[in-house]
Image (cartoon, helix red, strand yellow):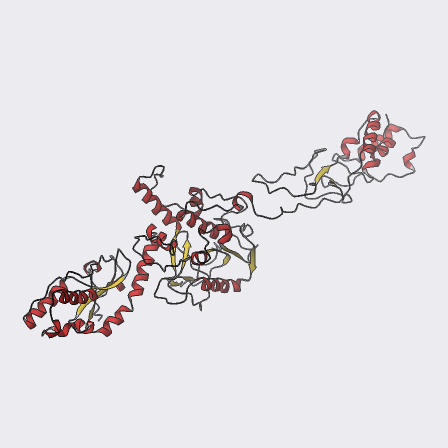
Length: 552
């Protein structure tokens, strides 16, 4: 049977060691020769003082965030009563210089365990659990997105003192977002969640993309770079599983693996994705002591998903995480309580990262959409910094598009090519295809060169021309040079048309004196289909060819 006892942390409001120090200080100020007293043996050392048998609990102070081994205040009165009963002398039941505490209320049984300490060895063994209690308290407060805690950790290393009730490392932390897009039709996400352990799914989820964005505050402060500039000071990366890039896609919501706008995407094998994520996290996280808070804090949108790492991963378990949506809601509630003008009257957190970006007025252009793991990681870190620092500069790439030359246009169609099968065959004579881009913001213009235009010639329009207009048509054809494949204008024939016209023989083109003109013309018209026809001779000789068969 388990004899472990549990108590209420709020009742343990006095630090145990401070009681011993308070009595020694009282004896000095009152000129009491405690070493000559019969009860003086309890104050020879702190270990002897513990011989009374103190019932203690490890608690965390609300005001400072520091852990303590604390006792109930009533136990001081029990100690004084024991001295009076055994030795016949009275001691103060409440020394004036004890350290009062405001314990954090907790429901975790591991933090409410009662221990009776009789010697210094037990006390020191219990003291080894103090960092774990502080880590658990900080993890809880950061998971609840307390604004003061987030500000204290983000601005760690500056000279300003903030009464947030947490203790930072004094140099700065690393804030990172590792966004993973899992295939929606595969098994649930599997991997390692810092602070929670490995998942226990039977199947293995399929990773389509992994994106990372990191801002290392301690490193930036070390080189006197503050505040961080997102475009220049963020570490950015995007990895795509090459086996599934064109075979597995999500539909709700859709993913866009080829639309990374903040760097270059890397195509990696599926078997290497876990090693890459594990190595990257291991390089960012501190490795000194798992009992103390790690210098790496992961930013998430909602509840954290497992990181795709191998089962043999040695990722530290003391990595913290912060939900940026919960942080935004906490900031909103604080502004509402302070009565700041213009604060929205909203009483629930935002539903998604896109809604958060809209509230923060961070643009999401079409070339950098959500649904790409790299873009989402960058947007998450940018939104977090914008929440902490309202004057954060939005990257220029979100307004002007990616740097570098514009995407190359399709090459002009050679003149010798008979027709283009991927174009419409509807009879629209002399129609030019639009060279404008899509409806969204166009890419920057090309620095040099003339944009190619596709001109659609239609010989069926000119075939029934009367002789009175043939001369003008022939003069126009001679005046204008026919475009070639090397010029800025390329020629393509519209439609997938059968070559129904029979080839014209050079001897028959001179005409037969016994045959009548109308009969020849009617035979040609009957043999010609209703669609547009392509002359087998060049467009330049079209007028002469038609004149030989025309009878007025």
